Length: 614
Image 1 (cartoon, rainbow, N blue to C red):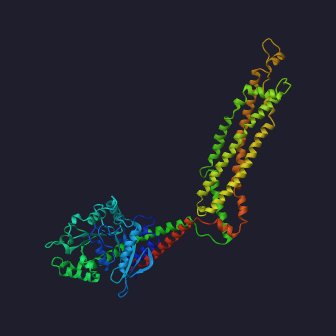
Image 2 (tube, rainbow, N blue to C red):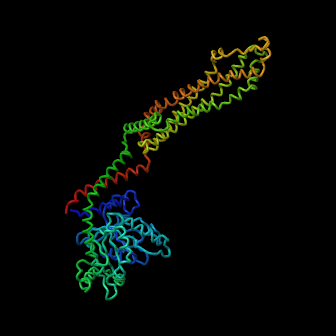
């Protein structure tokens, strides 16, 4: 039965293939972050790289002065059967096997430079490396850039803070085991790794201490106070490591031979002989592997819970994104009509008040139309001078005898023509609101989001229908205005008081002769016309909204897409497919979502199958 670590390694590789890796820089890294791993932390030149190479039993990491590790290296170790060839694979080169570990070192350096350039800058984007060997234990290690105290030439002024923040994104996670590497020839109180580990893991539950360079301590001194937990106690035992010397590295001393020399060092050491069975890189690897497996097992319920929650969310998102469209014309036509109905439902909700926006139409009738009617220039049009002019022109060569009827008619007709402007403006204002509601409804229709071509087609068809409704609305409101001027309300004028006024001590006939072309006479005519126009204005204020609603709003609710339905029914399969041509970004999103869903389901099944075996 596969070990839990091996299973976690495979799930992490699958996450990597989808770009779902940890480090805090990816929106979909929750599964990766939930899987336990071991982060290797230490200051520069603390021996981190040598510890990793000792665990792997291979010389494969770049070396040099300054910051050598400039990107996180996610190292997954897979134990194979004895006799099988060792090889390595990179996440960015999934089908290429490296059997020459010198080439592995070169590829790490080249891949680092690909992101950071040939500089001393760092990047949080990890490199993923898997090593298959009979000389390793199942383990996942993350090699992080070494902590530093000052920026050197060629580095950013914020490099110290940047590295610490990057390391914290890994070691701060509760599912991360911290491998804190410190050199034995320095005071443990100054250890950068221990200082950071104590901040993120104050109880020491997740921290393993590693002491390197024991063989480089001054003669007569030893590190027993640290290794035996008296100088700084951890919940887990300290492990001492003796790395290869620089001379051994220069001579390309075999790592298997170096492991044997390390065992001999502890076995024959007068200081550490009693701890020999719990010292060395081989013991460290087995200790970490055993603890990691227990760590994984303890967290399986929370991991399974996260996976189940993620599966529910992904399935919900797939439902939201929509399933793939059938290829036959009948199913495509049905889908298009269903999408049209979904849009039409939202559009009607805007008009009926279920969604905001329809109230703006009422605003046209309650605010804009009355304001426009009030602004009409009747004061100027019905001034004494203009009334005299219009009445005189209407009389022609023969002045009116008693009441200037033709003058009245011309004044009223001229005044009523002013109502055309507000009437047509109301039609245009409602048309604008309806167009805006079409746009909003298309944007709010989640089912349509995946089909930009159909969105454009529905928008064009809707706007074409609204144009026809506007034309009909204009004709109707202008007709209402024309109706008012084509037949005047006789009763209104019959109820007006007689124009003749008998002056004191005079005769009525004489009064008529004197006042017929006086200013008071024309002012009275203007006042009478104004009263009639106000009556018509009140009538139009009530009838124009009715006409606009009947011709535009009601028609939009009932038959906005009727013509489009007729046209769509005539289209062939290819034309229907073009309408259902999805946004490439959305198609990519659905594909990634489906892959991620498959990964999570597979992970859940595999965890269930091995979780409680052991």
